[in-house]
Image (cartoon, rainbow, N blue to C red; front, side, top):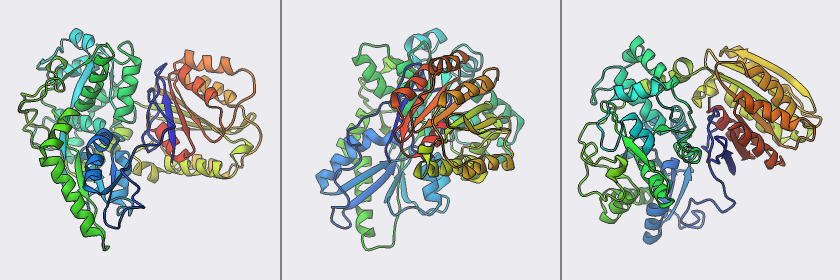
Length: 554
């Protein structure tokens, strides 16, 4: 699958998540026509049993490319990896696993626990650690009183975030490990738990937790679907738009090295006291009953031991800002201060205990509650191209995507539930409005099913005029106080007039557009819509993945 994404916070390109997740106000990423990285050699050509295939979160790409694949080549093994989002990895595991993957490498234990409830993933060990930090441009953090080495309490962070003293970004916790790790740290704090006490189902149901976390997550200015996307967007947008964010420490280090090299202002980090949350990069083996299983397990065990105990590997991981897996809190011996730079607020002298993640049922309930209880209500309008050129595989892709989004059970599996205060509008356009608009207030299952039925029953035909649908959606959404988003999908070029006026109207209304270009769609036309409105551009022939990415921005 090739999925190309550009998103714009009035300006910025961005990367994707392999699961149709989120579309609300973000922007950022870059694409390339070069072959995608991912294998040290072709596993199809390797000798049987000498291949290890890893499915990993995008957070691990630099580790895979710079440390794992070179080790595999040196050992004479054929190692390959595929990047998948946390929810996808968890779903594959919970469904019984896949013959495509021998090892699963999550960013943190949150989604690993959800997928591995039956214990089929074995030999699971943390490979390295990185804490979730509250970060911002150095000048902004100084203005807030959060300078380097500051001891900042959760109360101070909440005062800044909820009091409107700054803007803050965090990834969607139902789609991204960094967002989920931050989310559970603050749930734990609102429950009054100490670091060693895990959140319980009873605490999750308490009014004090519900009220506290609702205020907190609704204060988020933007909730991109992945941490890499968010970091790219933030740096592209600059301090005028992206002031502070919750993110991984190691990504701050990576980006600060780039910023300093480019002569730009770096980010400063603080570690909110009482809500220290650490991602532990668990890597586990998925056994299969075949002749090569023992050899694959041996390769896997050698890789784990190399990452955990080889001095060269540990130096290389530290060079990428990853802390040793056996660290006590945030303490490190003799860190490289060019990487773990105290001028950026990076601490290596804190021995505080991190929060304990709850049991899998509590994790699942908390993630479900994010959509149906806590997050800001959203008003999302879908404008889908139903012209004649969409016949066949194109419309089959739309139907498959509609099932993922509007079938309540499947949406729950994707952690993309529609909330009880959401409004959803579906319009199918060709030369004019071909079907709809179909409108649903709330998340009534029968109402959501009608969206899926409308798509299933439609037969493509006619020409293409996306601007009419864009203009109508803007008029419907412009006065709404909820989070607003337009998802616009086409496989062609609109040749009708009124394009500039329609796009300008949407921009003036402050509504971001996720513009999905499918098949032979004109990318320049769609990029203009996304860039002008501060939304995102997605180029993909996989409509299920593209529409899931869009839906995740809610």
